[in-house]
Image (tube, rainbow, N blue to C red; front, side, top):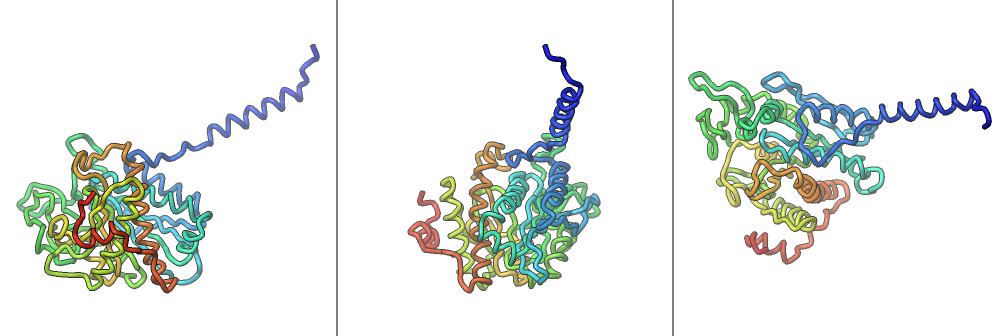
Length: 361
């Protein structure tokens, strides 16, 4: 048998060491089809910004009551010019875990496609996307503590004097017909609107950031669950958005895009028309600021699992919602930058929905 040369042994050792190092350094792939606690979402945001530094920036824009930093991802190609923008927030209600899951999926899809899809590349050159995966961080973390806190909705700010309950419903705290309908002054209810309009730090973070550059924003999307709805302004039945007809047409076309993915029907309309009247929502606030397109997405399901949507439904829910959100964003982009609009061909399904037949299938 030929003698084993020392140099051969050294080569083998170098190769083995390199393989071992690669295995150690290799990061596990992030799972977009499971629910993640806040710590993992924060780490994901930081890593995403590092890995995509050319188009992703991690931005801090506020604090929660428990002094956690509210962060968002700004996604867009740096052009050196002032750009128009799209807003998306998720997790304003703590128990709606599918919403943060969708925000993460949405961001990943953008990053996966902008180099290969000419349309996405065009939109990222013209627009900046501002995405907050979890707005109500304190409440979200609390909802992960144990089974008894899983269905927590509000933030974690203390109650007014004389009340022993905790938390404000952030989606009743915005300055949009605040405190008038579909809200409670009882701090122990789930729809307590707060001590005053915009009394909550989380609300103020959004209103200051968006409000101070409201002329830049073309679209405001806030993601919730559940019900399979696309809600447009306003939550108060006595008010109608000046572009109501266009909001309905774009919303119905988005619902049609959602239906084509997995056959799920999303109803479209104002909250009083298809859900219930409410005031103080971020959707209504955004439209009152002059942001022309403002929608609330209520994701799956229709009540079978409610807020505890199983993880095996994360992928189909995100796939269909992405199709709907992308339709709205593409329409808005084309209207401003291409002198036209995205296709809103009135299919029979669309015409029937606009006519009020929302349960034909």
